[in-house]
Length: 354
Image (cartoon, rainbow, N blue to C red; front, side):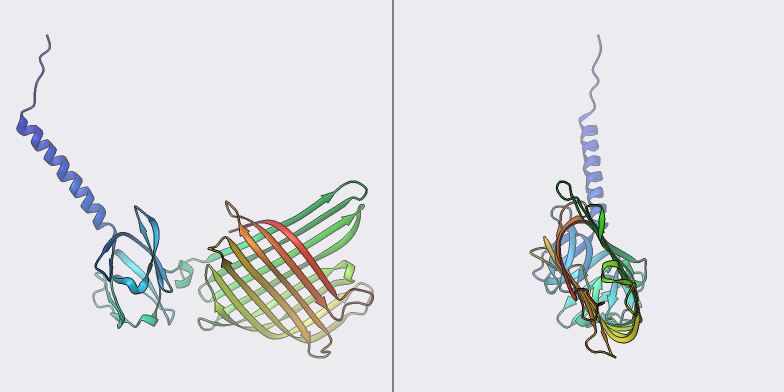
């Protein structure tokens, strides 16, 4: 027969106490490794400070995910590690603890107890934990690529290919924007459209809003008799808004335009050039309205205006894919003889954004 050994009651009680103590210690360590948010009404939230931009603070909790809190309702932030603070003058500092009030923001930092600027006015603090590119750490890269394809077989064979895309690179005071389009159509195996363009602009931010830069544009349109139009020159611009949900920039400057035609006389002239880039998310980010515009207006012949605009709506789908509907308007008041001055194109597109 096997004998069953029993542990003494005091031993079982001691073991249970150790388990309880271990659980309490693990819970305390979890609490210590988290940020604490103290609200104006005295309530406390435990989690992680994601970022603060504008009047909203994003705070990640284990029970509700990322929540948005009105900044004026926050009384204190106790960080587990130093937070990065972006100031109005583009400087970046760190602080572990913040006390927020209508009079200003008091900063404390255990690592740097003698912080040179221990307090800030409300308008001086632009962001908490901003995107790395804003403080010179890394860069931001985003863009779109879109396709509009049509293939028709029967009494008439038609093939249409429209491709466009843009890439935006951003690093603190520098920005590079590239935009290109390609259109190639065939009707009964005969080419009916052959055109492309490539616009490139570089911007250097002199202040938070003002920037100076340069533009280089190249364009070809076989059936408008345009072999190559080159547009180059400096631009001065203003960034009205820049963010995830709303962007607006305007640029203006003198441009040199050189036009090479297949059969008509070549031309070159100085012009006033401008660009507008605008986009905004609507209906809780289920739809984005965008408008891109560029133009050159001859200083030598005011009847000579080249104006292009793309206006549309983007609908984010899944995994970065987007559907778009767009109107493209192209005006060339001094187009080659026998060619139409105004072209309007309507498109339905499928694309990808990153």
